[in-house]
Length: 463
Image 1 (tube, rainbow, N blue to C red):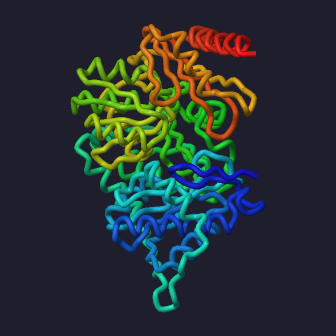
Image 2 (image 1 turned 90 degrees about the vertical axis):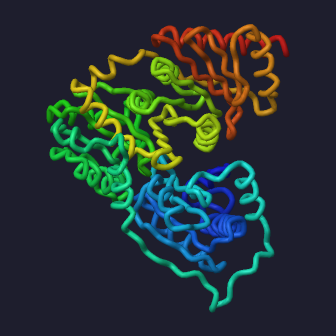
């Protein structure tokens, strides 16, 4: 069994022994700790919750609600929802924070508590550590019967979220309607099956071919929206002669597209395309994490803006976006963060902006993809012994390439003209993740192999 405690939440496999899986004991203690922390910090006594459709969701929801009530906190329950919808609801409800019950792209045996502050943004490192510390305290005082929290169910936020998207100046419903798009969608039998069709209808898309839109939590394939998991969607696009396919993950914060010929648009290029559209209409800066494609930097500079890289993790991207006044940002996994709406990855606003962009472009989605620089990212890893000094090893690689542009804000990223390699240590196992990018698969793989060879050479010298 596995239980992973990080700054943004608690993630684990359902069942097993307490502390070694996501059990009722763990759910209760971390919910109480988070509730105590955010209500004390904000002076507010309300927390918004929502969940994706995975099988364990109702059970976890019941435990979270009970835990919060037990310490006198009122709960606004959005029911089946999405991560970005809960993020929007927290400030709208003037709440102390939010809990999203979702394990995102992880398989059905996983679930998690994603933790939001009063702005509806993921809690930072300091707050995350405080939650972990509070969870280990045993002297918590619970509320008496007259002070228990109250629960309110509010299912209005699907429409509220859509209304906020339709009100954005750069979302052109009329242009989308006139394009008469035929769209195939894969919502992996989670809450995207509720929210994506509703959004498309509101955008004027009349022809929608639905795959896996029953929110019962029985994922028909690995729920991460990667090419190998989207074969059925690709086939549906081709067989129905759809203009494009749309795929989201279980909590609807990741987004990717399939072209009219069944080929993948590329999840790295979701952000690139949306950013291109935003920048053409709102000049400004962009941010993505260090492991995302260079294409965003190219598109940003071509539009007269400045690109900045952040450490991996949504909270780090958001902080860098605020610091640099970025008009658009996100992550290369198909995560769009559009601050005009809110500071969180949001597949729904991404769909609306992308369809507007495609409608105004006036050609096929594959033609649109052809207008962007073409890069390929190779993902590798090297396994080390648990006692290995990984930080020291990365320092020696840094010294070897000290004459190249490099960054150490998150592991080590080294640039070679328009190619790069990013080395990060895993937080959960003794491995170094090695991401590299070049203008072809061969170039990217060769760069990764060169760095792996350097690491092995350094290890041999240390023996």
